Length: 185
View (cartoon, rainbow, N blue to C red):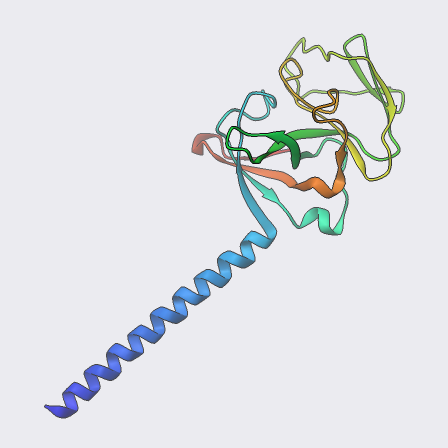
């Protein structure tokens, strides 16, 4: 009987140790994953028709540690805008101009380096409000929402030009709603 109790105790110890290993590995794996990707939820309609309210997105955090944001990337960045709970808002916008680009908005059209942008991602007839003529300074980005009529973006001083250091990552996949899972271009 005593031998049976000793074997049972060893078996329980072995099971507990295995569970601790599995739990520890899961925590380590979750930590490593969050170094490279971050989930985020879309709030608002500023990126319609590309993204909709309550779309669940995964952003690539590591890509901009080894490279720079490029024109047309859809990014998530920290802003100075406050949420109702007092924390700063993360915004999702499209990169229109990078450092050194000349961005001009006039008569509802957007030009970068004197070329009219071909913005196939906009809804038909979308008008871009504003009168902008600037060269994007070093370390900054000029961003716009795809739904220009409601987007608070680089055209307005509340957001302004985005520091590249405030960019959290590039949106690369929409995970939810499940019937609309897709890579974001």
